[in-house]
Length: 244
Ligand code: PGA
Image (cartoon, rainbow, N blue to C red; front, top):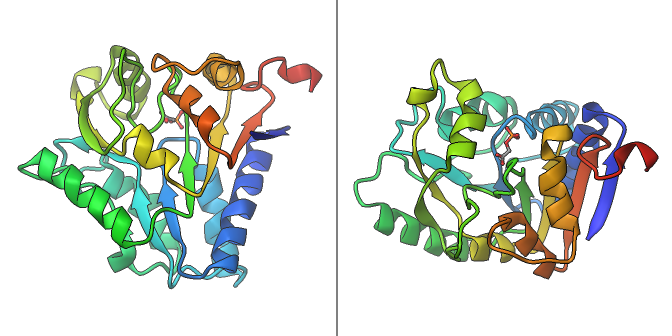
């Protein structure tokens, strides 16, 4: 695993955006796997600036998103449809028809997950997947468990994730308890992965990503079997950070 330890969140955001822009510049119609949450917001801002400055062109880029709450309407400001529009799609020249997010309003979750797997296949697979990491080691909404689902699936969120995400809602009771998410196998099928981790709250999860074990109780530890992963973190998230 390649590791980039940054001095600040701004540096982390710049570093991640540089890798995404390079990917798009090398393959104009590449497939980006996108993530939500607070961590990638800075990177999306840098990408929007680069797009405006003519340094990167998203007009032919295709995108798929990692996950979406379930059930949730795309108009709900807490939905990941809304997040992506607000934080990236409205700020860059991507064709909305080329952006794909799991449907939080679908009637048949199993069929929707199957559709999404086939869609990724039909796009030729993900060239670059962006990931955040949960305090509990989740990637996407693959929560720690005794076994993990390889494919895109409907999942129940853990108390830890509901509590961590409650900061975006007026009340914890409003946080959805279910989500649709790419599976671990879906994520590992990406040709390249960058994982972003910022702040001391992520340090334990990052330690488990860097130790020698692979365990379903730390879903991010599964990334150890992938040959092309870059961890980009700040010193607070990096175990032993201040000494790096
Ligand atoms: P965060 O979420 O970026 O808001 O910390 C990351 C995640 O839960 O994957």
